[in-house]
Amino acid sequence: MILAAYHTLFKSDFINYNEYSILVCDNSKVNEIIGIGTTIHKFVEIKGQFIYLLQMAYHLPSFEVCLLLPQIFHQSCGRTFSIF
Image: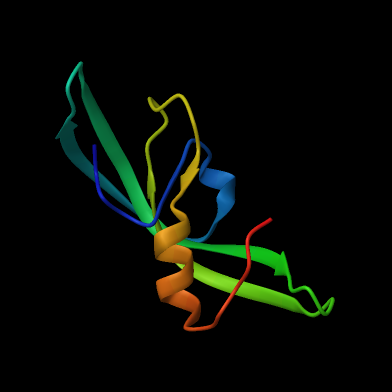
């Protein structure tokens, strides 16, 4: 599995996009990254303010889930958050 910020199944999740063909091996099969680009995520702070996070993401349509790692989210924001 790739240790990256975000994986998505959908090309429509990207605000910009570059096509690639990169094979990635995990424990059970080989997956193909078919694109890399930027996605935008909207979060709400405890005080009600919106936070928009621009994140580099891989387009992996063969994955079974979309994955945003919380550790990468916190590193990208540079702020303190509480997760409930």
